[in-house]
Length: 85
Image (cartoon, rainbow, N blue to C red; front, side, top):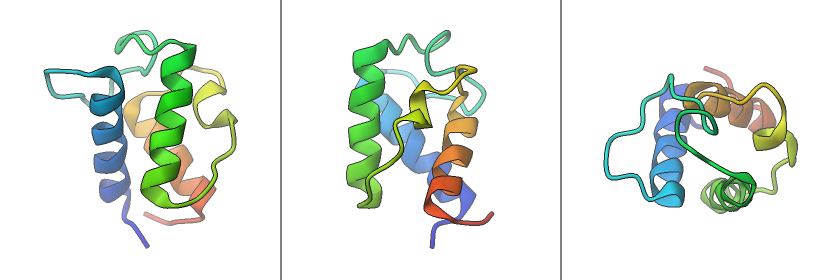
């Protein structure tokens, strides 16, 4: 079972790799508005997260509104995996 901090680390790493960011990604940054993820990036990010956790995820993890922050995405991931803080 992963802690929320581990999930946030996992999400930050997946975002950096997917969006090819050269600077650190912060928990409060919005995936689309601030980090620039487009639809194809969100699909790729979902695949990366699925690979990292070894489980298929619901499509809404990255497409549900509002545009999630990195921390909110980690919380969604935790809920989908049934993990607690």
